[in-house]
Image (cartoon, helix red, strand yellow):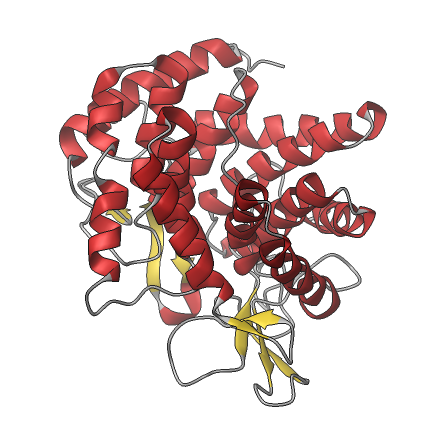
Length: 373
């Protein structure tokens, strides 16, 4: 499928040009947010949850083009993360986001054994956050020891990779048990999702759903749905367990049926006000689109065609109407992302993970095979 003007290959050419410019401007920064005005990415700490996405973009660019500049720029990121691991730090359940797109990607592309070691150490760290009684991976490092979040669905790929790499099923046991908890307590019957679920950390019993980055506990945060859709598709790929494939499809159907006319989601699908007045979240669209492409490739073609079609509608809408192609000085790719609206944080901005999954989706459309999620 192509847009009105561009084929997938032509879009990819523009993406590569943009990545080259981003590399010159972003350099060694650890970007998270770029404001619409000015378009300069910030520089977050190395243990912030988004720190893996920029080096992930560089490794993805290298994998697809073999441009050594991308490789050189990406090389030290997992080294810097390991150094921070040995100091006082804030690493948490998101080490999957941080080490899959750095250490694991680097190992897959170069065979670097130190990168492999770092990826496996991160998997051990993530496994250590598993609550045995409640079958959930603990979120964050606060005193909320029983909180878990739907975003964790994407971090399970680190455990699945470690299980395959070491032929050690303990990692897969944890991934599956946590995925089962996501299916039972996070993914609702209609396909919408809870962001946060609180469990009793001693007994493991579920206590309540918490709104988190959604508008309310019973709302439908779109990026949370995107994480669940993609994460369950990945678990289906790793395990071939129909339970996860069905969960991914349930979320996909909810997500697709609630898209506005231009196919780019609002930040929450179930708000109390006029939804058309609510901000969009381009990052949720990019994540869901890449997840839909993954899901479409895992199921019978006659079913998957619908997912693929909607994914491409989303991607080309992002490409045409939510991007910076006509803003050459802007350091990001996508506009109109929403980070955390209930907290009034990062509304109508560019988000590095939106850029990553947008690029990843088009890489898939152009033959990319070295999956990291």
